[in-house]
Image 1 (cartoon, rainbow, N blue to C red):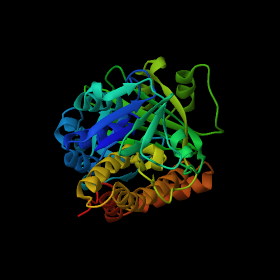
Image 2: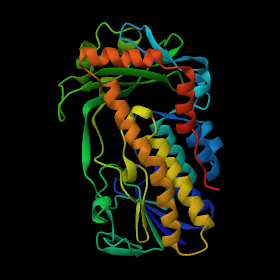
Image 3: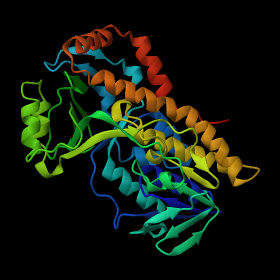
Image 4: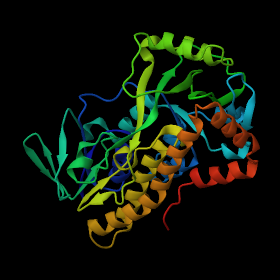
Length: 375
């Protein structure tokens, strides 16, 4: 089968690798002129690796990631460092971290850069028929996969775009360029309308993120200085993480998700995948994981298909909307809870977290961190 994939991100490349290994003729069309070289850290849980294992590349990704979180205390704290809740170890035994750039590079290597056409603005047919227009050239295929991210223009061309929703907060992300002592702890500190989190990466680096409830579109002349001011007085090693990061490597993005979940991820012979299908806030650390699940599920559905491509895509859409859409909703709810700024609401949130029993956390982990592979 000839398959065209629009977007060389994590979901698109994962799907391309799985389909290529199963004998399909795969071409990836990427609008950028070169592979991505920026990004920060990613947290991947067991569901991601179950999907990677199905695709045949789980060990390759384990080799570039680290599981050092299993030897640390993980949970939520107050800005002064006192614990609100500590996650039971069983809730994150499958957790691994990786630099997004390293993951992207490894996926590109596993597929082969010759399968990727860079600098191509690829467009789908509005009716979902199996063709791709690339600035005047029409490429005929049997299946189109759209994995071109949250701002997907092709989602709109298919008539499936609900628009974007601003979460109410902006986020900064960074990776330290020198070691920082995390003192055996990782996770998030929750303030009033502010969050700071940090997790270890391979090679003694630390991935950190910070959020602030604020109108969209804001910018500071010096983002690093602004962050040091915003989080002044927070527990160690908050300031140390910011200080250990080059100013030019600090990324700032307003956080958006889809305005509402899509009822379907397909039209005709075209399927949406990753952020193009279910862009969500980062609060449950499942954005990349759900895209990887998409890739594995689509590969599985195509492999089991006894009828038409459209029938396989209908099953894919049914499986993935049932799985990813509720996670998208829960992630938005978690963001609202964690970003609470009113003193009374923030105090109630803290009380709720402090009173949460381990079994509740384990139930959440079990539901989120396992890929329900179709049988």
